[in-house]
Image 1 (cartoon, helix red, strand yellow):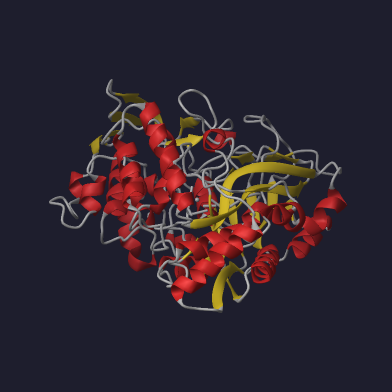
Image 2 (cartoon, rainbow, N blue to C red):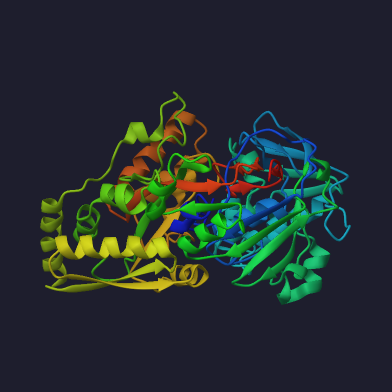
Length: 558
């Protein structure tokens, strides 16, 4: 789901998760929203339909071809709509497309668009809106970090690869507008999760005429966008918050109950809790400081997530390029202490990349159960690796800068890491550099950091959404990591038609990544939050944009 889709701890906290999703690093922000009840789609309600939320971060980007983070993807899920969207049970349901057919070989999809689908300015949503947007994503001139997720579409990789005869020839992409309401998509190979991708950011449509009319101002403000989802952004006050209002042109507006959603940017959890207690917001995430205080109360809830948080280790740094140094950093700190004491929100220690209870093999066995834990907490072994690594790089003392988020809970995590690593690895000094979310993402993209607290939430329900992130030169590698055997396994798995062989390739790839200690896994997210009993049907998704407000409503407010 996501540049560090899932990347910000308070995604777990104020948002319940992104992430994000860990665009990447599927990373994310902290939108305080969650599951709620699962019914009420066409329920009639008579109370004012206004929902008040908090998020710990500003929206980094509203351009669906360029965004990389979970904060943006949550907004996308509510103001835009792809061919399909995820329903309440996380299965794809009609969006702009009312139906589709798939060829027998699984490589050609024909989508029939809903004639009632419109943009917020009244223009119809057409097949060309998808052709235009998808071509824009793969165009090398766009330099979209998420361009690689278009790889299932025929010729996408060739168009994006320098030296290939099709490089830059976007008209060769396997997407065609048969007529205004019929879209044909040809894939490189059968892709079981393709339908679920069609509501993910880069696959969303864009109104070509409108985008070109705005030029370089497109998507910078609420009024420099047009929307085709359940809501529109009626205002966007940068670094302060934003407001959604019901989209009167949305084709399924009768099933949208909320008239207005107000989101405040609040970085401090204590402040958010105070806003909740005073009735100014309807939901907020909790950090460890507040969990015991609210546990057992009617409005206290917990969730298990699918995001994995980890430390990026920039191998451009000569010290971090050393495998023993990386191994030492992984083994030298207590992950259970982090999850049980600092987080205390249902998160669990991670010694892996692909999360538990996320996907199953063709035989029905959990990916995580097959591969098991691929690391350990062992201070004695950590010191052995540390001494060996220091000798190899010719140093006795090392200072490493940790790039961190600027949110309240993230700072506590950073201090915990600093204390643990400095205590257990003699000669190591950790310097913490906290940055606002948007600036942090930019520093990671430029690889202008040494070690970074990051994360990834899934973009689609398949291990590949985590595995292909770290191929050589990948947009979200951002660490200088490279292993030819790993690259081959990932590339071969993407072409493999045999589900069992494909799964084995991904299992082996994860083992290589962890043996190389390309990343230092930290935890698989959980979240604790408060939600007013009168808030219903905020739907939490396992992949893509974390929360949908399409079916939410207010009932029983006193």
